[in-house]
Length: 179
View 1 (cartoon, rainbow, N blue to C red):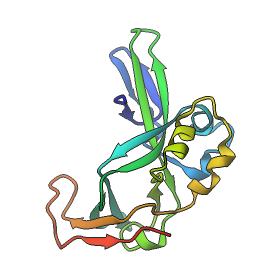
View 2 (tube, helix red, strand yellow):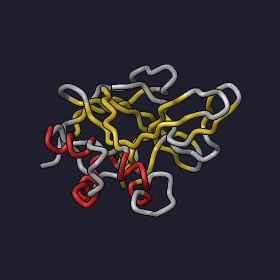
View 3 (spheres, one colour):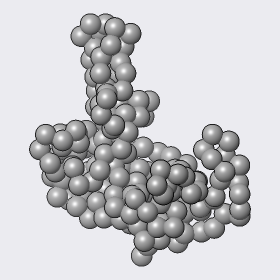
């Protein structure tokens, strides 16, 4: 377990590191097998698991937020599939660890909450997790089914006013896991 900057691509500065001009807090599933993309090599050699209690989603129309939701696991936590990179600033000698969450196409059960995408929620299967974390395992074909929208556990969705104040606007409701 280690802390990481939630932005896969970093730029060295005289003070350490800053996020790249390229948005990289998430990595799209359809870029993982595109040579030259930011996620191509990390998907093969530096996958990570990001343990979370939950995640937030916002729905926008024409640049305006319609609503915000917080989604948590009904029981326990979640394991998000991600990528990481290790960085060395040659000017300062500082090192940093960065990461991104892999995002998938939208899930039908989440479409009213967020119609654009969903994070990769990994099944809590120790054999799969060990294979995912094995940096010598570059057989990404074994992960193909993970790159399809799937809810491996039941979620509780709670509409909130906005992420900065996090005030509930209604009762939470369950979104049942997929079979």
